[in-house]
Image (cartoon, rainbow, N blue to C red; front, side, top):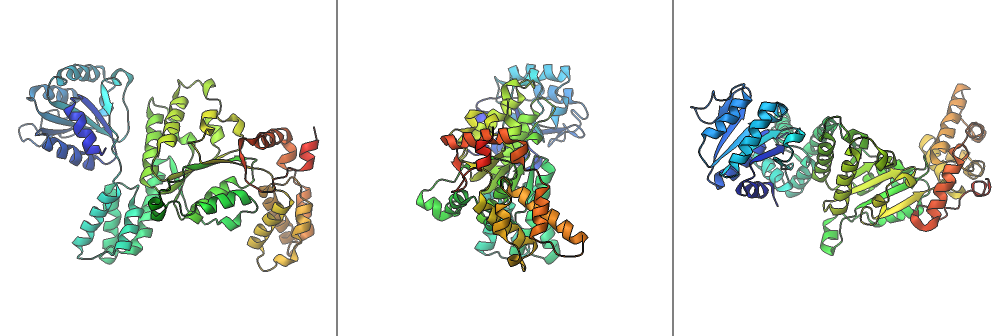
Length: 500
């Protein structure tokens, strides 16, 4: 159901007090006026600075007086819609709260509705039962396409179908005002809208996402080949590379839902998330779950809904949730009045019911801390365990990093020996041993050698030794059949299996 259909139904059902959170005030008001006109109702708009607008006799009514703005509602005959801008700032006032409750009783019996528009949800508990919240979506593809075509027509320019599709896809996730602004900048620069303006739009999108302070837009240059080992996981990902295409839709294939990567720190879980986005040619959004939680009552839930709305507007995309175990572990024992549980519940419901092509990649170092309902089928397509690399995988990891640092001298290094001499090392520890060897060689005005790498590795105490018990528990959990192994030859190091 579209927003206008939902609003029309809400108005006809005589919901007295409606709250619409949105940064697009102008677009929301245009939608309200369109629906009100179809129902034959007048629209009155109020703000704190100018009072009521649209009727010359009422321009001074309620100016800098929110209580008078509500009293004005009682003076209007049946058949009106009242829009109150930024009225959430006054809801904590006892007089305003009481007046709204009184109005709610009266408006139920008349064809009148009071709609509050604000950029955030800020509803005090005494009014939570009286107010109905409607979500206003960001512009969809068809609306964006019409806007681009109208702007292009102003310059008497034409856009071919492929360029138009790319521009529409790039604009998804931006407000209509931001789209107009960035396309206006494009016209100011070269007097037309061109296919090359996609990069300009993506730059605006990155700024827009940063301003939400919830999601980060990650440019991804990591390729699948930059990951050493993890053959099972790579094969699984490569098989789904075309799952977001139109051909896949025609075949009847549903969108992939997501992937949970659990395992030991430094084994390439985050690197895999970046590689997926690059290989599938999809934007990568990183969610820091801690940013969802805020101090005001209801704000955490509002941020969660905003995150979901933004991710769906940017779809198809990759939503990367790093270290999800730290965010949602021990839910029942938290003393935050149930905020974490409500956020988690909203997130779980969306994961199970979402139809938009948002592919979730969640990483966890300690999967044993995660709530079991997060792990059931339907939330993720698959749960992979990423363990310590075996000797063959360590050879691949050394090759990847040495090829990055010394692409023309790779043959100078004995990767077989290096892999053999570094048991229990993770990918991150292997990279660090090479970097430390480079420092050693640089300080002596020479290139680094095999011996330098082995010397650096001898100074590193692997996590497999410092957190041996925790890693052993993770490996036992994975081999019990609760997760799919990311590596074909995931043979755990004999030292880890035999030591107490």
